[in-house]
Length: 395
Image 1 (spheres, helix red, strand yellow):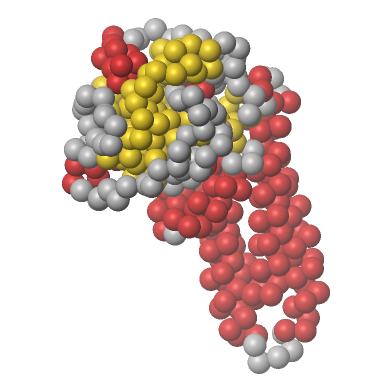
Image 2: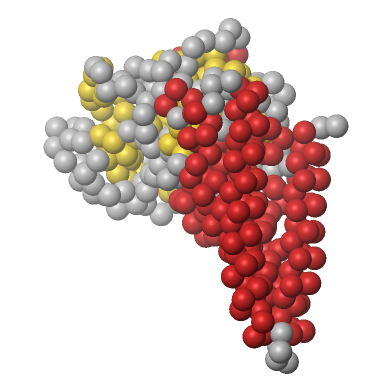
């Protein structure tokens, strides 16, 4: 039986159970219980990376992680249900009993679905063989995510980001002075070319067990079954998971890793997304678009403007030495999790690779130009051997 089907069955049974429980117990008692589940789920999200780091054996790690999730959720539900039972004694004596039951079923199921989404995202970010891919490819989990409003998804993503390393490097005084804050230009991000290109922008997650942290970033399909991202996104990750919007997730293998240039390539078998077309480097004043998954949440496409193009001294991903690199300074709202996403021309072709934001100035980001990116991108189809992902960068 496919892992995604097993995940679907588990989630479906869970949601039906909470629907029935909500109708039977009513809003007050059920909502108290589901708030307990939410508290337990939040505790699970916060503790999952630590549990994974404490258990070195991969097989035992899977069991320990799932056991911790179940235990924390059950404890939270039990405490919430107990408190809800105390409050329900007052409600059941009033005319509110019938609507209380109906609302109980509806709201309990909705909140349970959101908790499932939050926990599922945390499990996916662990990169546990079979389990993470099964959860990410679950039709029900993906449907919940699709039906959840983007602001709610973004809020949940920010909560998860407290335990997932979505950080991106920050650069100060890149071009000899504090960067000037430029106005973000108006760009039509909804053109057919840009919408088509966005389908090839992927989310990348994994777990760097040596640092006890989950990691999340962005990437894009550069050739058949090859994805480009930043090296710092997958540093220390043995088995990155690549998620294509609406298509589930596929486990990848790192076949290129450059901690100095901050570029990595992931080989992904049967990747269900086309390759983006490589374009020329952008010029100062050009309008562009930066695609990615800020905070490991829903896909976002951002208008961007090229403020400056030049060569600066940039630290490697470990901060041990600096090397010259040609980069763009961007007027764009780059956030954690956008690392590794493409900087696109308005015609949808690739013009760079987002990798950093300003440490001192709001709405200033940085991207690698095609000078460094193009040679790696063109060689991607020939990269087949697995390589080390180095050591993790402690987030």
